[in-house]
Image (cartoon, rainbow, N blue to C red; front, side, top):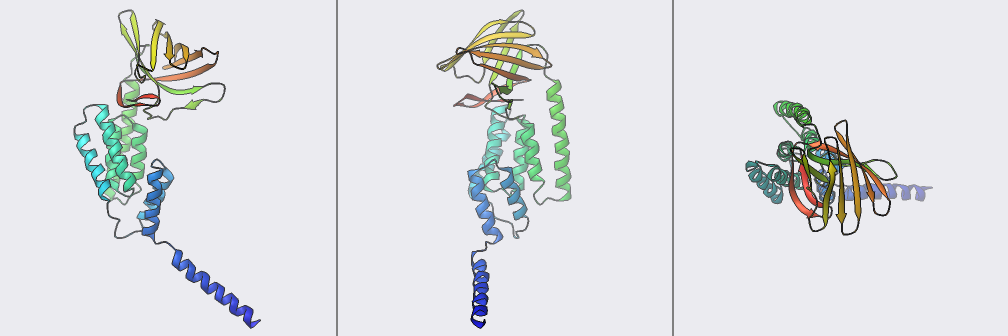
Length: 287
């Protein structure tokens, strides 16, 4: 019995010592989570864990030089932002800074400001939510909450500023084939965008996201509340029949093999090419 008791005591002592050897300090945990975030930079769950953990660390972690470099680049780009593209590029730089230093409150604030300017209102509100998880003064917290209200106002203004009729920018918001509807992310730069132009009673159509050498659009006919066009690509051809319905453009596309896909488009006040070309065409940002 004595020998068994000694073995149990020895085993418990070994486990206690082992846990002490392998237990990570908060800074080591933060370093590990930050490395994971660099591989999954859009993981909200990881960012929340990091912000919770960093609040317990004192003194605060230092800002990596590469994060500071991205932050300064973002500031320089945003100062020159008179259109969507530089604001979008500034937001990308600030986002990189928040990925390399995900506890850095200033980077989240600047990211939200750039996203708001670029019309990425959903993303701006999420960046401010993460900003509010950092250690802030009461005054900074009040300022952030007020900015959230201002973004809500921007959303209302953007919705009311879009004119009626078929003419304007149309960005795909969702689609489905034979299954469930698939929603495009609210602030996506990859969704298909068409611009319908009207001069008197004449209409023209342009695919803003399409790469000309890879995909062409041909207008068949158009009116105040409907448009019919054809998309010709190297690997497929499809006819689109679209009608206005409650401020949405509802399109049924029919492919050359008989397959059909329903698509919904939302009208935007402006759209601008901000990058590309990519796999799905040019990256286009709308607001």
